Length: 187
Image 1 (tube, rainbow, N blue to C red):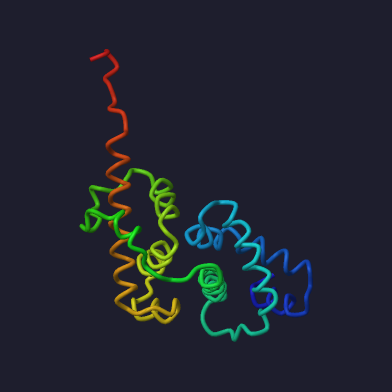
Image 2: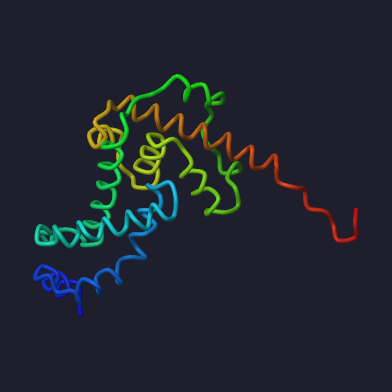
């Protein structure tokens, strides 16, 4: 069954079609959820919420653009809505004090594992993580981010800059605590 047929059946609340749609797209949407959540279990809950909204709003899908892109946008918007609901988007002096170095990341500074890097991104303060993900991973402009998060463009730029600075510090700290490999002959 193709996507258009699945969509038509999902509009009619066909449970089998909903299950098929979920199984078709869950592995593609989970990484999106993961990068906007603090943990794997939170991302799983978020994915569940995204599919509930997809099934609830599927009749609003116009057919313009990719269906996968439409669902990805729902996942991102739900993460932003959750953030707005539980957090006031403001900068605190205490967070600013965490940042002592303001250089940008360089390729040589990255850890070898993408999984490690993504876990460091997940540990960023929420406002920095959201802006970092929207700008660096989802290619939104600062103007678009400002509109979505109801902040100024300069706040978006500042949050990105500060988030990168924290990431750089944490990556460098990881490199410092890694044990040196020794040769097999004990030297």
